[in-house]
Length: 162
Image 1 (cartoon, rainbow, N blue to C red):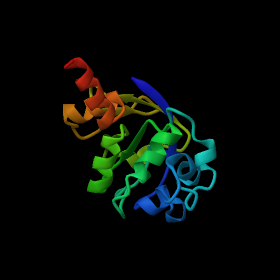
Image 2 (tube, rainbow, N blue to C red):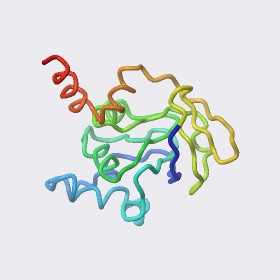
Image 3 (cartoon, rainbow, N blue to C red):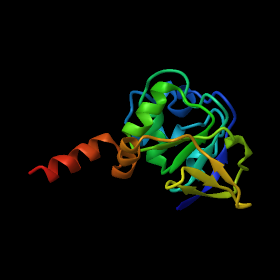
């Protein structure tokens, strides 16, 4: 199990908030410090590696820009927990090694509390010890996250085949 501090967000967090358009011509190192600044200006400067986001439904709606997920990875976010995700964001996140947990009860998590991610049972354990059950994730997607994303996974497989 891994643990992290919760950053709480509401519903409908879009890719423009995650990777603002004004910075899209720059590299991810320059985009990430502006991640979610329109919603929580302190987020990018204060989030720590291993922290998690708990959000309302429709996380990652909007454009298909992969920089939205990449900014969270760059900042060290361990996982995003929400009742639902945009399909494009969902695939981009796993491709980049960001764990997304679809959890109907994600909004029960409190700002700043420490939670544990139980990937064996696909659950989030909150500070009170309650288990919030998440939807199943195919093994190949969990393997992709463990490898740090699709490209890393392909490099590892290629190395094994030599």
